[in-house]
Amino acid sequence: MKSKNIVWECACGYIQHGDTMPEDCPKCFRVAEFSPVPEDMIEEKEAEHILSMTSEDEDDED
Ligand SMILES: [Zn+2]
Image 1 (cartoon, rainbow, N blue to C red):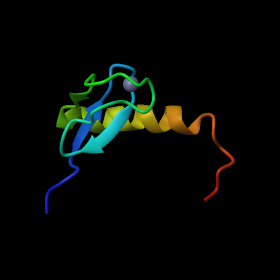
Image 2: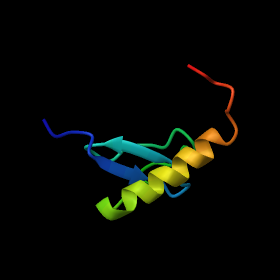
Image 3: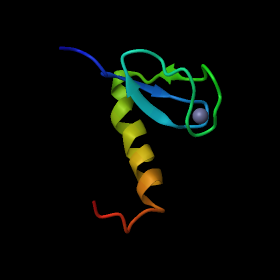
Image 4: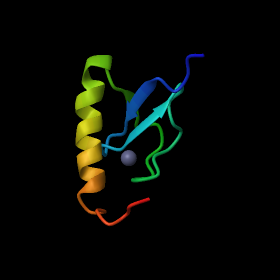
């Protein structure tokens, strides 16, 4: 099954996976501001996203 293999990036930089464009952004609440990230950019975008996600939340060990 092929699904959730597109990475979408909001204008604010929020990253979300999905097979269709997210309707709105949980971070900045804009609607329809997502664009698909090219496959060769996904790793780079995710690395940025993970870095920005983890930089403030280091004590969540779940
Ligand atoms: Zn956003």
